[in-house]
Length: 505
Image 1 (cartoon, helix red, strand yellow):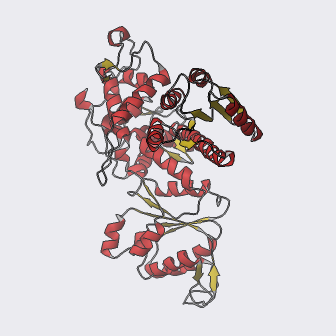
Image 2: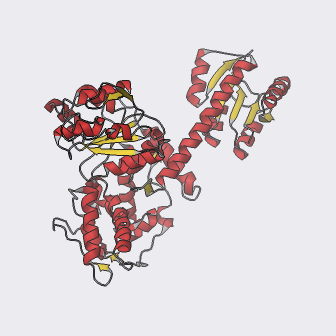
Image 3: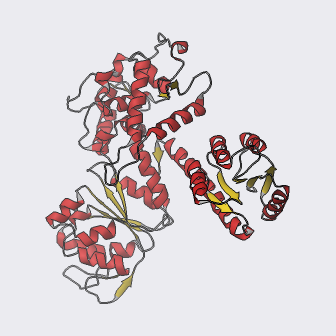
């Protein structure tokens, strides 16, 4: 499709010339000889680029930029003027202009700016589409999770999988480091090549080198034939070094050399072997503690840690517990031919109030055991320690509560106020427009972060506030709050638990 351009200028000859030049570059061009006509066009149609004069007969150019941005925030605007000044350029940029150009301007130079502006708009749209696509997922490349922490990980995988950057995955035992590694490999351009995995803590110290680098026949007692080793097997594909902090210290310089030179030597051979692979490493240790203890070389750490992915423990993303549980329930119900298996409210209570020290692996094993021991298809409880607080209880919530009523007329304005006036009237806005105005207001109120200061996660605070507001609006009725927010019911319970909202309800 042709890119759409809007030209706003009171000089007819300028409009005609610019229109001719842009149409020659395959743009679809619309013109307006006044600010009022230009705004009417922006309000009714989306443009990829707007070029406007600073001095219009009915509008100040700076105000024109502001108004255009209100109607079409993603469209980039270039201001072209014969009255250039640094002050005006700064003012235009603050108002949202992409660039400020003085007349006369060579079209070739201007067109470079136009291309960059259009590209930036397209990139913003692609990023928004990607984020929307990812945030609507509860699974991605075999990884299960609807929490924001997992959405962030999905986005990192999407961004880096196609590259050959070394990946370092951090997480407690059982969080799913290998599952994340699988997602990275099978999303990459190496997906049709081997994915070789070596657990550095599972092999005796003296065997790791020959397993990793391979060996020649007769290199040591028992070496009855040549062996390529994991590096050779991974050629063209990916290599996962699980628990890399357990790799013998004397072997780490050799691995570092392979990463730097892409050449290695089999045990017992002086013939160099070329290798092309993507390295993914993982550990359940604090890498800096491992460096301090001498079990991980610092230079190796920085080499393997081009991209770092931290997987939060399950207790920090409790809203993922129900969807993980149902994922495992489906797997084991099919495996053990128990098609009617389902969780009771009591089972959900246990899941959401247990710390899951063994993380996803512990949850998985509990679900498998529960399916095997289930009677009549109902999983009434899980075999986990009774260290949970029953203050959040699914059984306390009626499944079909139609008693809740909410009189919108008594609360038809948001409490957020600006300059003493109500920011948003629900009679005037709804849906996306309402959220857009609330988001704009919140961002305008944020203070610029100070250099070196700890960054606060605003989305975490917003999630906390929105869930609490929904619970207050529904007078503590959690089922109604989940319906109001469009949330899967167990996910709301995970949020309540994570934000410790029980006592505030």
